[in-house]
Image 1 (cartoon, rainbow, N blue to C red):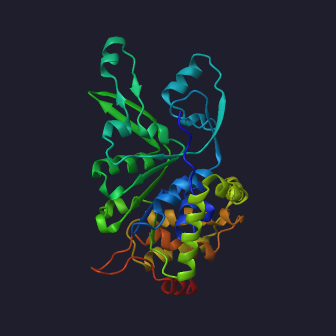
Image 2: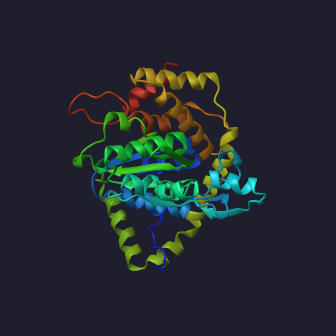
Image 3: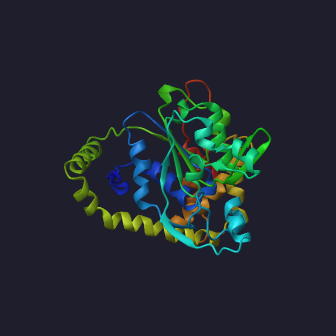
Amino acid sequence: MSEDPILFPFTSIVGQESMKKALLLNVIDPGIGGVLIRGEKGTAKSTSVRSLARVLPQRMSVEGCVFHCDYDRPERFCTYCRQRIEAGETLSPASAPMQVVELPLSATEDRVAGTLDLEHVLKTGEKKFEPGVLAKANGNILYVDEVNLLDDHIVDLLLDSAAMGTNYVEREGVSFHHPARFVLVGTMNPEEGDLRPQLLDRFGLSVEIKGEKDIPTRTEVVKRRLAFDADPEGYVARCMNELDAVRENIVSAKALLPKVRADDAVVEMVVSTTIHFDVDGYRADITLMKAAKANAALEGRTAVTKNDIMDTAELVLSHRMRRRPFEDAGLNVEELEKCLQSL
């Protein structure tokens, strides 16, 4: 059995603050809807997502459940867990850290969603389900590198499951479902093609990242990577206090989130912002509200402020705004400030 690879520490990634914040906000509130990270090659997209594994908090699941059902949410139990309870079994909790589950580009729909053994159903009358990637992803991070190269119907399947929190599989009139609540994280290089606008809107947050052009900052990137490559174990050991601090901050923020409140003035700011930037539908308004609350919780506050909207608006709106050909992506921060100051 091979050991887990030694990952570059999340806290040692230089710059890319928007990307790191987008990832942390989704861990604090998976209901935000995931994040799409777009940027040129070699800008630490994959490194950042994979390194997130070392700061993810523990989660309580049902011991022995292949779907990792949330022990504290019995109303979301899978069919098998419910059957165990009906049979008189007392379910036990199992604690384990959240994981980053990777989906290969070559994955088929059966590999992603899982399959029903129809022969078993016909012979015994009982459903037999072979779990797929979505079963493993439940309660975790599901990471898709080069998501723009994934077949559209697979992307649709992932986004639908993430939105509903349930994976439905049907074959020849036989159906099965199980919980599939995960944070979908996709990375891509826009030079290799883009996602359809309908799919872009389904990602809660989006980040555009570029390589550092500042010489001192870029020098620090190179120095840290060389130091890590020379002694991975030693380098990670020196970062453990920082990694533990980030994990503890996430745990505290998740506990605080239900207590975070936004008054009517804040809600009006959110709605006014989406209208000002001509964003269609209500998904952006709801997502911006969730992101602002998660940002407040991350900073240890129970009240959402104008600054929380400032800190998260670009993450929520940049990929939803209408653009003319050749127009740069992103949200005009000065325009956002003027919009909020006028309220």
